[in-house]
Length: 316
Image 1 (cartoon, rainbow, N blue to C red):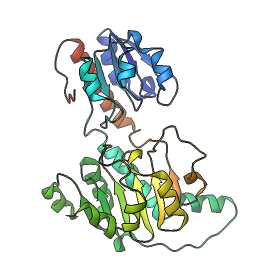
Image 2: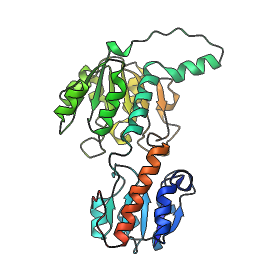
Image 3: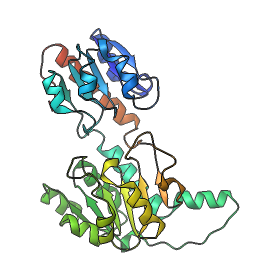
């Protein structure tokens, strides 16, 4: 079996999973680009692959039509908005993901971005390196309300990370876990209450038609003046043009994001000229621990399908 790995740095950080595939007799083709594949790149190589360990590249009808041998996709992560599940079903392609493994990694990034935004750490670092000595004032988190849009595994761990700073914490989730919220001292409220009451909003929602551009001019106007917005979920949730306008006029005090509407990013976009915008290159899940564990789960999912067995975490 021939397996394409579109997730990056596979040989470097995913030895455990790679070993499982090799011991199963698989030929492995790794991503040499250090970024997601484009369609033009995929179309040149998918014709003879039997399975793929998928990063955030787009897998849709156009790709599947070019991959007649493709039997399984194992998503190296949780979100599958980059995979057309219905098209995969039509082509008899089994799709699985890796839920729960990256929760700690992404939560740490969310907490780091919250602190970096509120304390303006990148901006202060840049100023000192230029010989400047600014004296900004900050609010301590214990006086702030942190709101979570979505309260799944990652948001819960982010709440754990923030708990030691003693902010008030509120959250919205379509299927609220009241028991977990109570244990963490988080008040479950409506989505609009998170938007209107929070000083810091951390996004933890999936990418769906319902959540596309949830954060836009209209909903930003519901927010407090000077709110901080953090996104480690999916870029499609935030309308970047509206967010840039809100940052420029001070409605948003800061935006920190690890995800973007288009990846790789367009550096000519309006956000990149703003000092209160913090961007990291979709690296929340890039930890040694997550890569090793997820490599095993994805490799086992592919080998199960190759043997005619049912993989764990099957979605299609």
